[in-house]
Length: 313
Image (tube, rainbow, N blue to C red; front, side, top):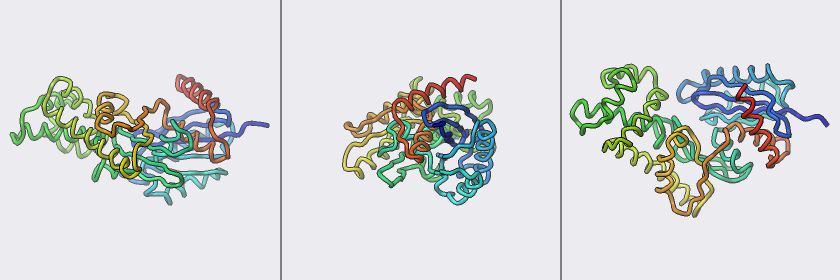
Protein backbone atom coordinates (compact mmCIF):
# COMPACT_ATOMS: atom_id res chain seq x y z
CA UNK A 1 0.00 0.00 0.00
CA UNK A 2 1.47 3.35 -1.02
CA UNK A 3 2.04 6.06 1.54
CA UNK A 4 -0.41 8.97 1.67
CA UNK A 5 0.94 12.52 1.76
CA UNK A 6 -0.14 15.10 4.34
CA UNK A 7 0.70 18.75 4.92
CA UNK A 8 0.95 21.08 7.91
CA UNK A 9 1.63 24.81 8.14
CA UNK A 10 2.54 26.82 11.24
CA UNK A 11 2.08 30.56 10.78
CA UNK A 12 3.01 33.29 13.22
CA UNK A 13 3.65 36.98 12.97
CA UNK A 14 7.09 36.56 11.40
CA UNK A 15 7.06 33.42 9.28
CA UNK A 16 4.89 30.69 7.79
CA UNK A 17 6.53 27.26 7.74
CA UNK A 18 5.03 24.37 5.83
CA UNK A 19 5.94 20.71 5.42
CA UNK A 20 4.67 17.78 3.37
CA UNK A 21 5.21 14.35 4.92
CA UNK A 22 4.07 10.75 4.68
CA UNK A 23 2.11 8.59 7.11
CA UNK A 24 5.30 7.10 8.51
CA UNK A 25 6.87 10.50 9.21
CA UNK A 26 9.12 11.00 6.19
CA UNK A 27 9.38 14.74 5.51
CA UNK A 28 9.53 15.17 1.75
CA UNK A 29 9.62 18.96 1.43
CA UNK A 30 9.63 22.15 3.48
CA UNK A 31 9.06 25.82 2.66
CA UNK A 32 9.32 29.02 4.67
CA UNK A 33 7.51 32.19 3.64
CA UNK A 34 6.55 35.45 5.34
CA UNK A 35 3.98 35.14 8.09
CA UNK A 36 1.59 37.70 9.42
CA UNK A 37 -0.78 37.87 12.39
CA UNK A 38 -4.18 39.38 11.53
CA UNK A 39 -4.12 41.66 14.59
CA UNK A 40 -0.87 43.22 13.39
CA UNK A 41 -1.15 43.25 9.62
CA UNK A 42 -4.81 42.75 8.79
CA UNK A 43 -6.45 39.51 7.74
CA UNK A 44 -5.95 40.09 4.01
CA UNK A 45 -2.18 40.38 4.45
CA UNK A 46 -2.07 37.23 6.58
CA UNK A 47 -4.14 35.17 4.16
CA UNK A 48 -2.15 36.39 1.16
CA UNK A 49 1.08 35.21 2.80
CA UNK A 50 -0.55 31.94 3.85
CA UNK A 51 -1.61 31.21 0.27
CA UNK A 52 1.91 31.97 -0.95
CA UNK A 53 3.20 29.39 1.51
CA UNK A 54 0.63 26.78 0.45
CA UNK A 55 1.30 27.42 -3.25
CA UNK A 56 5.05 27.07 -2.71
CA UNK A 57 4.52 23.87 -0.73
CA UNK A 58 2.29 22.26 -3.35
CA UNK A 59 4.72 23.25 -6.10
CA UNK A 60 7.44 21.05 -4.58
CA UNK A 61 5.24 18.27 -3.18
CA UNK A 62 5.51 14.97 -5.12
CA UNK A 63 1.76 14.40 -4.66
CA UNK A 64 -1.23 16.41 -3.52
CA UNK A 65 -1.69 15.95 0.26
CA UNK A 66 -4.89 14.26 1.38
CA UNK A 67 -4.97 16.20 4.66
CA UNK A 68 -3.96 19.75 5.53
CA UNK A 69 -3.63 21.24 9.02
CA UNK A 70 -3.05 24.93 9.73
CA UNK A 71 -2.04 26.37 13.09
CA UNK A 72 -2.08 30.17 12.83
CA UNK A 73 -1.94 32.95 15.39
CA UNK A 74 -5.33 34.61 15.98
CA UNK A 75 -6.97 32.84 13.03
CA UNK A 76 -9.90 31.79 15.21
CA UNK A 77 -11.20 35.36 15.02
CA UNK A 78 -11.22 35.23 11.22
CA UNK A 79 -12.26 31.66 10.57
CA UNK A 80 -14.56 32.36 7.57
CA UNK A 81 -11.74 34.15 5.75
CA UNK A 82 -9.13 31.48 6.48
CA UNK A 83 -11.52 28.66 5.65
CA UNK A 84 -12.55 30.27 2.39
CA UNK A 85 -8.94 30.77 1.36
CA UNK A 86 -7.98 27.13 1.98
CA UNK A 87 -11.13 25.36 0.79
CA UNK A 88 -10.29 26.32 -2.79
CA UNK A 89 -7.36 23.89 -2.69
CA UNK A 90 -9.74 20.95 -2.36
CA UNK A 91 -7.97 19.00 0.39
CA UNK A 92 -9.85 15.88 1.44
CA UNK A 93 -9.27 16.73 5.11
CA UNK A 94 -8.86 20.34 6.25
CA UNK A 95 -8.56 21.69 9.80
CA UNK A 96 -7.70 25.22 10.91
CA UNK A 97 -6.89 26.18 14.50
CA UNK A 98 -4.98 28.78 16.47
CA UNK A 99 -1.32 28.20 17.21
CA UNK A 100 -1.89 26.71 20.67
CA UNK A 101 -3.09 23.16 19.92
CA UNK A 102 -0.09 22.28 17.77
CA UNK A 103 2.20 23.34 20.61
CA UNK A 104 0.43 20.90 22.93
CA UNK A 105 0.38 18.12 20.31
CA UNK A 106 4.07 18.49 19.54
CA UNK A 107 4.94 17.36 23.06
CA UNK A 108 1.95 15.36 24.31
CA UNK A 109 0.33 14.14 21.12
CA UNK A 110 -3.40 14.55 20.55
CA UNK A 111 -4.48 14.74 24.18
CA UNK A 112 -5.32 17.30 26.85
CA UNK A 113 -2.65 19.74 27.89
CA UNK A 114 -1.60 23.36 27.93
CA UNK A 115 1.11 25.42 26.33
CA UNK A 116 2.46 28.87 27.13
CA UNK A 117 4.02 30.75 24.24
CA UNK A 118 6.27 33.68 25.02
CA UNK A 119 7.76 35.31 21.96
CA UNK A 120 6.77 38.60 20.36
CA UNK A 121 3.36 37.93 21.93
CA UNK A 122 2.30 35.60 24.70
CA UNK A 123 -0.66 33.52 25.91
CA UNK A 124 -1.48 30.30 27.70
CA UNK A 125 -3.44 27.87 25.52
CA UNK A 126 -5.50 25.02 26.96
CA UNK A 127 -7.00 21.97 25.27
CA UNK A 128 -9.45 19.85 27.27
CA UNK A 129 -11.36 17.36 25.17
CA UNK A 130 -13.14 19.30 22.45
CA UNK A 131 -12.71 22.56 24.34
CA UNK A 132 -9.91 24.95 23.41
CA UNK A 133 -9.33 28.37 24.95
CA UNK A 134 -6.60 30.77 25.98
CA UNK A 135 -5.83 32.88 29.03
CA UNK A 136 -4.09 36.15 28.28
CA UNK A 137 -3.23 36.60 24.64
CA UNK A 138 -5.64 39.44 23.93
CA UNK A 139 -3.17 40.96 21.51
CA UNK A 140 -0.63 43.68 22.22
CA UNK A 141 -3.23 46.44 22.52
CA UNK A 142 -5.05 44.64 25.34
CA UNK A 143 -3.11 41.85 27.07
CA UNK A 144 0.04 40.14 25.93
CA UNK A 145 1.41 39.70 29.47
CA UNK A 146 5.20 39.42 29.74
CA UNK A 147 5.85 39.03 26.02
CA UNK A 148 8.78 40.31 24.01
CA UNK A 149 6.64 43.23 22.92
CA UNK A 150 5.76 44.16 26.50
CA UNK A 151 9.36 43.79 27.64
CA UNK A 152 10.53 46.04 24.81
CA UNK A 153 7.75 48.58 25.34
CA UNK A 154 8.41 48.84 29.06
CA UNK A 155 12.14 49.23 28.45
CA UNK A 156 11.55 52.08 25.97
CA UNK A 157 9.02 53.70 28.31
CA UNK A 158 11.44 53.56 31.24
CA UNK A 159 14.17 55.13 29.11
CA UNK A 160 11.82 57.88 27.90
CA UNK A 161 10.85 58.70 31.46
CA UNK A 162 14.45 58.71 32.52
CA UNK A 163 15.31 61.17 29.74
CA UNK A 164 12.47 63.55 30.61
CA UNK A 165 13.18 63.31 34.34
CA UNK A 166 9.90 61.70 35.42
CA UNK A 167 11.56 58.45 36.56
CA UNK A 168 14.89 57.31 37.91
CA UNK A 169 18.07 57.04 35.83
CA UNK A 170 18.68 53.78 33.98
CA UNK A 171 21.37 52.40 31.72
CA UNK A 172 18.52 51.45 29.35
CA UNK A 173 18.85 54.94 27.86
CA UNK A 174 22.33 54.41 26.46
CA UNK A 175 21.84 50.73 25.70
CA UNK A 176 18.63 51.27 23.72
CA UNK A 177 20.15 54.13 21.79
CA UNK A 178 23.12 51.96 20.88
CA UNK A 179 20.88 49.07 19.82
CA UNK A 180 18.60 51.26 17.71
CA UNK A 181 21.26 53.53 16.25
CA UNK A 182 19.04 56.50 17.12
CA UNK A 183 17.66 57.97 20.35
CA UNK A 184 14.24 56.31 20.23
CA UNK A 185 12.64 58.79 22.64
CA UNK A 186 13.13 61.49 19.98
CA UNK A 187 12.05 59.20 17.12
CA UNK A 188 8.67 57.94 18.22
CA UNK A 189 7.60 58.04 14.58
CA UNK A 190 9.96 55.14 13.88
CA UNK A 191 8.44 53.08 16.67
CA UNK A 192 4.90 53.66 15.49
CA UNK A 193 5.78 53.09 11.85
CA UNK A 194 7.60 49.79 12.40
CA UNK A 195 5.18 48.53 15.04
CA UNK A 196 5.01 45.60 17.42
CA UNK A 197 7.82 43.42 16.10
CA UNK A 198 10.21 46.40 16.13
CA UNK A 199 9.37 47.17 19.76
CA UNK A 200 9.79 43.49 20.68
CA UNK A 201 13.23 43.46 19.05
CA UNK A 202 14.53 45.50 22.01
CA UNK A 203 13.58 42.93 24.65
CA UNK A 204 17.17 41.68 24.60
CA UNK A 205 18.35 45.09 25.84
CA UNK A 206 16.25 44.72 28.96
CA UNK A 207 17.78 41.32 29.76
CA UNK A 208 21.28 42.65 29.14
CA UNK A 209 20.68 45.68 31.38
CA UNK A 210 19.33 43.44 34.13
CA UNK A 211 22.40 41.23 33.92
CA UNK A 212 24.52 44.34 34.38
CA UNK A 213 22.68 45.18 37.59
CA UNK A 214 20.31 47.88 36.37
CA UNK A 215 17.58 48.34 39.00
CA UNK A 216 14.93 49.52 36.54
CA UNK A 217 15.53 46.59 34.18
CA UNK A 218 15.35 44.16 37.09
CA UNK A 219 12.03 45.65 38.18
CA UNK A 220 10.53 45.31 34.68
CA UNK A 221 11.86 41.75 34.37
CA UNK A 222 10.18 40.75 37.63
CA UNK A 223 6.91 42.52 36.78
CA UNK A 224 6.63 40.75 33.43
CA UNK A 225 7.56 37.34 34.85
CA UNK A 226 4.92 37.83 37.53
CA UNK A 227 2.28 38.65 34.89
CA UNK A 228 3.00 35.35 33.13
CA UNK A 229 2.91 33.46 36.41
CA UNK A 230 -0.49 35.02 37.19
CA UNK A 231 -1.84 33.49 33.97
CA UNK A 232 -0.61 30.05 35.08
CA UNK A 233 -2.21 30.56 38.49
CA UNK A 234 -5.52 31.43 36.81
CA UNK A 235 -5.60 28.11 34.93
CA UNK A 236 -4.37 26.28 38.05
CA UNK A 237 -7.41 27.53 39.97
CA UNK A 238 -9.76 26.76 37.08
CA UNK A 239 -8.30 23.28 36.75
CA UNK A 240 -8.51 22.59 40.48
CA UNK A 241 -4.80 21.89 40.74
CA UNK A 242 -1.66 21.10 38.76
CA UNK A 243 -1.67 20.41 35.03
CA UNK A 244 0.85 19.62 32.31
CA UNK A 245 2.27 22.81 30.75
CA UNK A 246 4.70 23.36 27.90
CA UNK A 247 6.88 26.44 27.57
CA UNK A 248 7.79 27.62 24.07
CA UNK A 249 8.56 30.77 22.12
CA UNK A 250 11.64 32.80 21.32
CA UNK A 251 11.83 34.70 24.61
CA UNK A 252 11.69 31.54 26.72
CA UNK A 253 14.17 29.77 24.43
CA UNK A 254 16.71 32.58 24.26
CA UNK A 255 16.44 33.73 27.88
CA UNK A 256 16.04 30.62 30.06
CA UNK A 257 16.52 32.73 33.18
CA UNK A 258 13.19 34.39 32.36
CA UNK A 259 11.43 31.04 31.93
CA UNK A 260 12.99 29.81 35.17
CA UNK A 261 11.70 32.89 37.02
CA UNK A 262 8.18 32.40 35.69
CA UNK A 263 8.35 28.75 36.71
CA UNK A 264 9.53 29.70 40.21
CA UNK A 265 6.56 32.07 40.61
CA UNK A 266 4.04 29.44 39.41
CA UNK A 267 2.44 26.82 41.69
CA UNK A 268 5.15 24.51 43.01
CA UNK A 269 3.42 21.30 41.94
CA UNK A 270 3.04 22.33 38.29
CA UNK A 271 4.45 19.92 35.69
CA UNK A 272 6.28 22.23 33.31
CA UNK A 273 8.17 21.03 30.22
CA UNK A 274 10.18 22.89 27.61
CA UNK A 275 9.23 22.20 24.00
CA UNK A 276 12.10 20.74 22.00
CA UNK A 277 10.25 20.27 18.71
CA UNK A 278 9.22 22.81 16.06
CA UNK A 279 5.55 23.88 16.20
CA UNK A 280 4.99 22.51 12.70
CA UNK A 281 5.61 19.01 14.08
CA UNK A 282 2.56 19.44 16.29
CA UNK A 283 0.62 20.37 13.17
CA UNK A 284 1.85 17.18 11.54
CA UNK A 285 0.59 15.16 14.52
CA UNK A 286 -2.84 16.75 14.08
CA UNK A 287 -2.96 16.19 10.31
CA UNK A 288 -2.11 12.54 10.93
CA UNK A 289 -4.85 12.32 13.56
CA UNK A 290 -7.35 13.62 10.99
CA UNK A 291 -6.81 10.54 8.80
CA UNK A 292 -7.27 8.23 11.78
CA UNK A 293 -3.65 7.60 12.77
CA UNK A 294 -2.13 8.40 16.16
CA UNK A 295 1.49 9.52 15.95
CA UNK A 296 3.80 7.06 17.70
CA UNK A 297 7.46 7.25 18.67
CA UNK A 298 8.59 5.88 15.30
CA UNK A 299 6.68 8.63 13.50
CA UNK A 300 8.17 11.27 15.81
CA UNK A 301 11.74 10.06 15.38
CA UNK A 302 11.57 9.86 11.61
CA UNK A 303 9.80 13.20 11.20
CA UNK A 304 12.25 15.10 13.41
CA UNK A 305 15.26 13.43 11.80
CA UNK A 306 14.09 14.20 8.27
CA UNK A 307 13.03 17.72 9.28
CA UNK A 308 16.50 18.56 10.55
CA UNK A 309 18.10 17.05 7.45
CA UNK A 310 15.87 18.98 5.07
CA UNK A 311 16.57 22.22 6.93
CA UNK A 312 20.24 21.83 6.03
CA UNK A 313 19.55 21.74 2.31
